[in-house]
Length: 64
Image 1: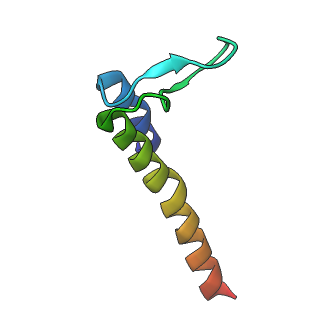
Image 2: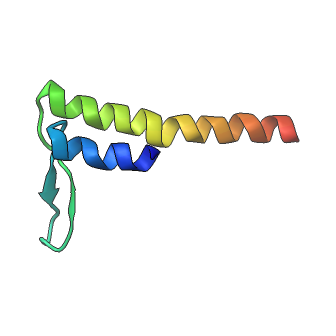
């Protein structure tokens, strides 16, 4: 459910999907400079990358 939410947000208007460099794949629009689009990239990076990373590091620290 977690990944489903982050996948659907651009379909409902929070950021958008755009073709990547050689037009064979689509990704989120990280080029647009407006705050609304940037807020998705910021929230996505915090909750999908950094929060799990720090949780893994924290947990691993207390295992050892």
